[in-house]
Amino acid sequence: MAWSWSHTAEAYQHAYGEVQKLTKSQLLIILREWTYQDREQRGRNPSFRLLAGQRRLNQDTLADLVWERMSEQAICDNGGHHAWCCPDGCHTVSFG
Image 1 (tube, rainbow, N blue to C red):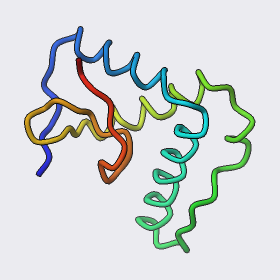
Image 2: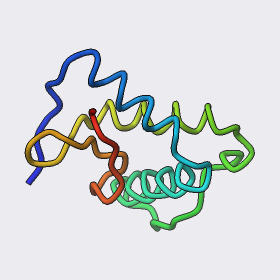
Image 3: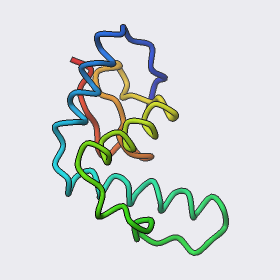
């Protein structure tokens, strides 16, 4: 079960900081999951390939891309302790 985000500004800042701490490898995996979901929803052949150029982006930019997608989805685990970083909730960060 998942809940919508409804936390304090401090909790969002903490979660954003946790996303910034993820390794480049972890961020790329999360972005692959978002890309897969996007292609699947558009009826295209889903694959786990990154969009052109994403691998060359620096870690801060990748973290911002992940945070943007997370914020649009705004889902957390039951209890509201961990924000989902990916579409399915297999990657999460703490709200603090």
